[in-house]
Image (tube, rainbow, N blue to C red; front, top):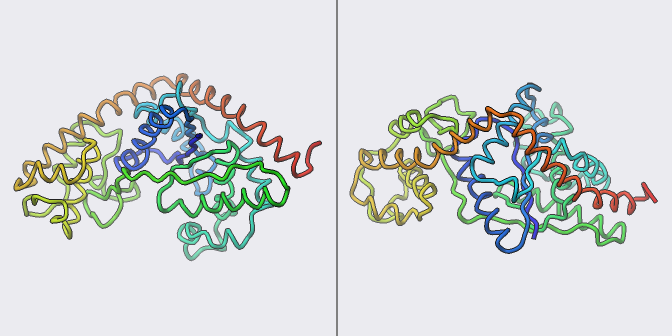
Length: 335
């Protein structure tokens, strides 16, 4: 079992990113390795180019993302941690797979339509074609499993289609068809100001999200000012139906405490948010404070982060090289 997953270096990771993805990666690292498998996590800096970003910010975000993952519990001694750019086989395989993927397949990718909006003719080729690079990201390592959310399942299906067509076209059983790994524990974290929208750093209100870099005081203040309703918490999770802000805060508490929302509601049944919010703030500070402190320590030692990425990339290149070579041989590029 080899699990491969990537994350774009967007900078300023927030609580939704941590609970929805990074925390799941840490748990996966332990579970997969306990079963004798391998985990590979990469910073998808090449994917970061599909939307304009200042060059200086892109590399700074890569460094910050690496520090965040390590601080959160990704162990570079146990998982292979690297950034795409240091492993050119990602780009090389993507070009080769471009000649296997079909235009009709890419035209069906809903995320391109969403991201390009009404300006499809003005969108970059990279934005249109990045699902093929995503396929290369996992096929180059013959990943057996890929953690995906609902919005990425279509891209994994494309990777499987490309792998299947390549194997059939060239008569080689070369690429493994990766299986989706959907975590049932991954919560959907919403804005603290409007629980109808996901927590996002694109929201203009700083009060809408908890950044992993936030101080203890800032975390507590944001939870204290989080939007709620005047009713006390009920004695069952189902009774919170229709109370989006209340459900969101209970979901966050449960995810941070590794408990079920039902369990949290049962503990605080009949209590108002004047009691619940301080308890949530204390829990968040206890869980996120050490991650922030370690992240800041790592960011103070750029050399350590560079060394982590260099070691990870060396391991990744060694795994990717024979797959790329076999692909080139199958396509007649090398003898």
